Amino acid sequence: MTPRLQTRNLCHSFGGLAVTQNVTLSLPQGARTALIGPNGAGKTTLVNLLSGAIRPKSGDIQLDGRSIVQLPQYASVRSGIVRTFQISRLFKDLTVADNVKVAVLQRLRASMQWWPSPARSARVHDEVHETLGMLGLNPFADRVVGRLALGEQRLAEIALALAMKPEVLLLDEPGAGVPQGEGGRIMSAIESLPKDLSVLLIEHDMDLVFRFASHIIVLVAGAVMVEGSPQEVAANEQVKQIYFGRDGHHAQHPH
Image (cartoon, rainbow, N blue to C red; front, side, top):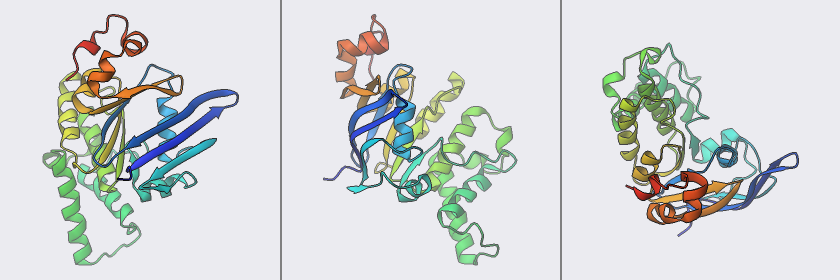
């Protein structure tokens, strides 16, 4: 079966500094993959490459077997790769539902249609509330985004991404800055994402990584050092020393 997303010998550099070195990876349909690595490993650059924000110096990126490496960023989104970071920032003065509605209309390319038909309006309404329901956000539908807690705003950002109907969702540190008490809601929402959606999670919280991922890729100095199941990665001595610290604390407790 053709992988949903795959790269082949992906390379990128800034000046003479190589930040992505021959990265070959594969995400099947329904993947629950985590990308981890120490600071400066090149995770952000790799996600920028996958999302079309920057173009690689060499190598290829394929979605469903079709090369997308030359597509501009907006075309990558339309083709099915959506990154939470790249979605239009939340409109803080609008409600959660209206934010998601903007994303739905953008996908339908109907943003400039001032007088949509009743059938189109009903379809958009249903889709907005279906998307909010996936993430448990319907109780917050009519709340102004700027008045929400940070964790709820992160969920709203994920809702905007889902409204774009992605085939591949790149979640860039959804737990960053969120108080510990709100992290559980974000994790529960991520676990409830559609099973056929391929998800690549970039995250520093190892408890979240081991709870979420069935496959982990460890990036060091721009190259894939090791990849495998959580158990395989946790048992790897290089991972313990380079990423987790020599005591291997997290490595001993994969979920």
